[in-house]
Amino acid sequence: MTLDDGSELLVLEQHVMDAIRTRDIERLELLITDDFVLREPLKADVDRRGFLDAVRAIPGTIEIVVGDGVRAKIEHGGEVGIITGVQRVRLRLADGTVVEDAGAFADLCVRRDGRWRMSVAFNVSLTEHK
Image (tube, rainbow, N blue to C red; front, top):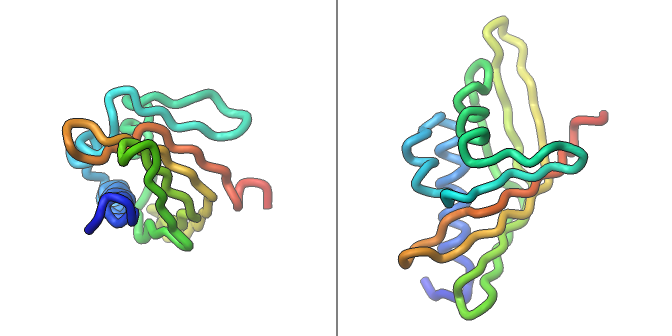
């Protein structure tokens, strides 16, 4: 893996999605920065604690969290990275109802202490207004 091909960022994104799917909050805490923020249009920012609490509170069983068309680019001498794509999620609620959601995302990552961590997640729902 080279620092300029984005492979490390793609691995980070996969780890984040896996941690969300399995609700592995301890792992997720290691993958995001202390000043992490989730931003969505027309909604208040969600800080690190709020994000982790929201993942913990996702109802039902998270069956799938995958990324489509995910691309990564490293900038600023290898210290900043941007990951873009579409995240697809499928939940099975307690009553058996299946809920699917998709969101276009852009994640800003920073290299801290020699490893990549996600600092800002920007998501635009593709299913919210259907």
